[in-house]
Image 1 (cartoon, rainbow, N blue to C red):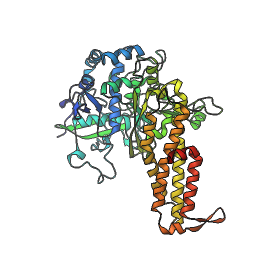
Image 2: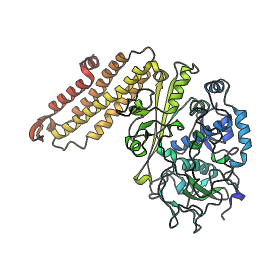
Image 3: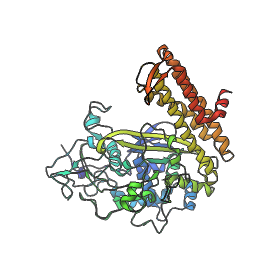
Image 4: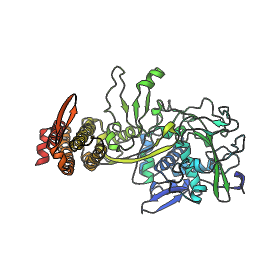
Length: 545
């Protein structure tokens, strides 16, 4: 029999619900308080999806921001880095708000609306909460039985945080009291805010280090309203079904805990068996870089024209593209200026600028390597389904963030551009070999490109880590040219070896109104010429040495 919020209790401050991996390799669940207290023995937050981990990390960061009454400075950070997280302040803060972290409170359930309802009294199963449970194709999912029909309180809490951050767009339940509802339906307002980002954060060796590395002071004290930048559990009045009029972020805490949805969980005994998910507070990402440090940003000409002011948008992750291939977006100070606009074409994530600032202050180990992790969600048509979850990382030397090493950072980006040209040469080789064998040149080219990028992955990462304060920028790019030439030459040789006897004989192909004989030797010759043009004759000689 369905039970009300009043008959259940699940205190997120005391009950274990945050999935973590400890330093010894074991997994477990901890409460919010224990996440902070055991932060030195926890390696990382894990979850059903990487995006779930990202949402919970932001929740913990918001708590630290609010537990510290003043603006965070380099001195503050240095003190915490040396002596540990401000656990006493965190405990005092959580004690002051402990009644706001109950998942089933009858007045203020965490991240929910207590009396959320529709005119028909409907409720959904738990599917709308679970991002990896396709609503339209549940045959193809790892979930089955009870795991697809109900959730433990701990898992429900994790998916609740995730829904506020990443919920899909599309029609939602039409909640009573929401004036936006038409015909009993809540029409789309977009995804959760994190779904609009290309999430990037610095991952440390422990949870404590991860929290500190991403604790970025946003804006000046004058810009950030420390009083108004509050999470939903500090609001005097609880959320109702309607959107909060005029609500705008004024700091990272609002963004990290933004209520994009109005949610209500329904329980039976010790399981969540149903839910309602309705529209919450709409938020678009234009020019949120002041408050949102965990994403890279790009200048948008269309948005700038529409708003009649310079506008930056989040730089979303591209499916199938390794994070290092967008290294230029992660490094500060190397984005070119937009012609006639006098603004950079992109902005590095605020967390990267913060790490560079900490390095300048001398509070980080000079030889430190920074692990940047990318997390994001790719949506399908109208953002109404989850198409893919992005999870990647790149390890780079702290030296690349230093202003004096800007030429070296630019060469890191140039190396990717050269690799891209080289991979295109591999693609053309695959196309020509297929045409020489009588095909249309389209079937093997995508596979050849994937093989080329896969072959370049480890060499580029190793080369990137070799860059340091004593590296000469021209010598570094010369080394990469030689390495990349050798790698792609080997990929091309394998393609040639796989070409059958028909391709060696070749065939004539119409091209630009003329016929041209394509054979394996000719295709290989064009390929080697393209590689030499991209990487230079010196690279060819070095690779052969």
